Length: 230
View 1 (cartoon, rainbow, N blue to C red):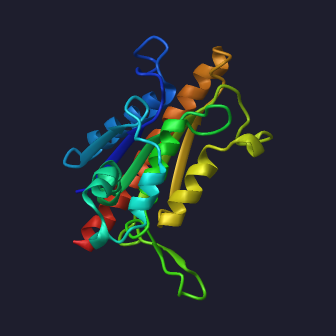
View 2 (cartoon, helix red, strand yellow; view 1 turned 120 degrees about the vertical axis):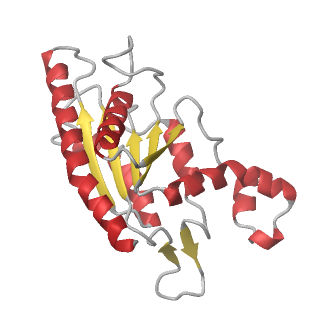
């Protein structure tokens, strides 16, 4: 039985196709999870909406607390890290992480960046030892295979082609998550949102087909790995 972590980060509360001015990324992430559960009804899902309920951004107090040894932390430090601890626990428990990540001004939403900053945790998701001469940092989420699915939407188009150098969504998610040990990445994208014409409709259809293909591809792989591990 696999466990999914479903993360939405759009500032728009609804889903396109169902709600006026709804989010395309919420539409895709919902589509992925529903298709997955239809094929694997015994699997479980944890949902985190960082778009509407964003994590607190990292502060000086957070940094002080995170880099203080666990047995030396004061009560206020544990309180400061409580939300981050919960986010890390959700991530560690997941076999598949599905992230709805719209492009805002060429990058991810600030709410999603706050989430990333909260899960990059020394001693929990990455290790650090300045006495290691070759490499003082190492990933800690290598205990089991985890699949990351990034579902994005863009106002323009060709961000996988001639405008790829301006696309700071998938690369900016891949880098920190890979640093933690999450290296199996998959993605699908909706484009042409600002045009709202037939090209947008075709892009939505194409992205949903890509999501369906990902569910087929990853479903069997994840379940097979879990059975082997059991």
